[in-house]
Each structure stands twice: as C-alpha cells, then as structure tokens.
Image (tube, rainbow, N blue to C red; front, side):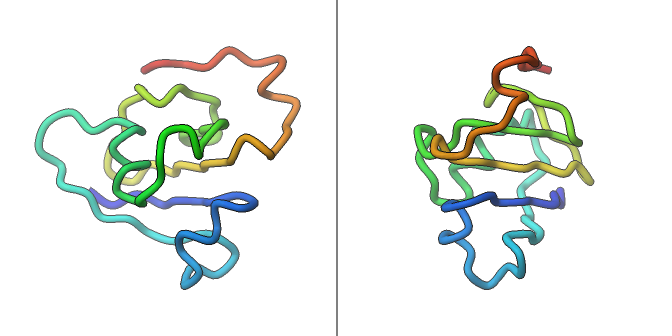
Length: 91
C-alpha cells in the first residue's frame, strides 16, 4: 500500500529528502495496518508523535490505514487547537 505522509515540525528530520516534510511511504498491505505501523516504519518512537491526522481527521495511533490514505504526524512540541477540542477517532 502507498501512503502520503506529512511530517510536521521537528519530525521532518527523519526524512530530510522529503520536500516540505511530505512524501510517500510503501508498506505491505497484508493484514491490518495501523498508524503505529507507519510510525515504526519511519523509525520514530511512539512518544515522538503527539498529533495524528488520517485524511484530515484527528485519529489515534491504533487507527487503521488503507492504500491512498494521507497521514500527518506532529511531535509533542507542536500545539494545535484540535488536540483540545476534537476527539481522536480509533477507526
């Protein structure tokens, strides 16, 4: 499966080759793939990521991903209003 990944703020350091922190990630599509799998594939630790968006919706690290999804990851030092007002979806 191919995902579009957007890395925000200090997370951009893990993929300096991605212009503006955005690029594509290929993952095996067998079985259930979740955001945690994406985080690990990027060589990030779960505690490196605080805010997660899948297709522009705030989700948790246990949310499933599908081919073609857009996933945005932001570190704990990134503050956004959504973390205070929106509920994280798990699906």
